[in-house]
Image 1 (cartoon, rainbow, N blue to C red):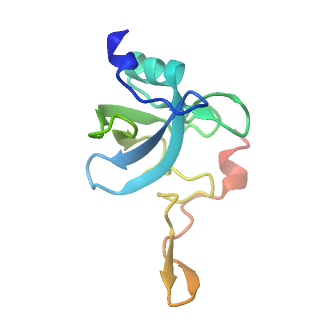
Image 2 (cartoon, rainbow, N blue to C red; image 1 turned 135 degrees about the horizontal axis):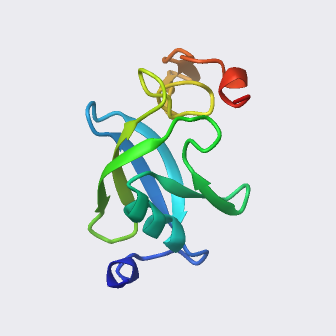
Length: 130
């Protein structure tokens, strides 16, 4: 597929991906995709990432039920970063983070310490027991 060839994959065959909520613009998470993950994402219309820790494809929501419906796949000007515009499914409001929060970016720097700014929406023990 020619469109996959235009991506600048890193030496490990990966490209960084930002998942952004289509409705609010919130940045939900950061992950990586390999060629197969990107092709599957485009085919399914749901986010599929490459898990570096597990060394396998990871269909977002496969364990938690918190799938990401993909509305747009964008590539940056250098073709080395992807942006997914998604709707986070499975809980209202959507939970993208494995900690049970809406976004993985739930801490902000306040002087010299990290403050937690977003609440846990569902206990991770319950999410991953399904």
